[in-house]
Amino acid sequence: MSLLLTNRDYAADGNGGVAAVRDGEELVGEVLFRLTARRGSFPFLPGLGSRMHQLRREKPSAWESLAQQYAAEALDGLEGVAVTGAQVRREGEGLAVTVRLLWRGEGLSVTARWEE
Image (cartoon, rainbow, N blue to C red; front, side, top):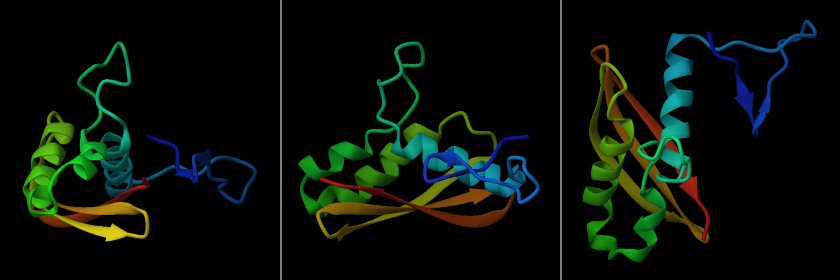
């Protein structure tokens, strides 16, 4: 069981406790964490995280293929999760990356954002 995080803080369950997440919600939380954490920023887990923040340095024509590659790299090791595609778009001063996944035969999409 994992606890629900909202805006980088634990979410209340309405009964004075902390809300827990269910199976699919837990997966989405783990995926978002792995995509938004910078790869190499955890000294004892150097392979944790992604290189998505590097997309801004690349040509826009290469963004989607690189985003799919970076997502697959970041999510490697999550059992039963396969990256099937990625879409990148500018949002204000940053980028939004939508990653399409296949999990337990079900298609999911997760969107993460990076500000410049």
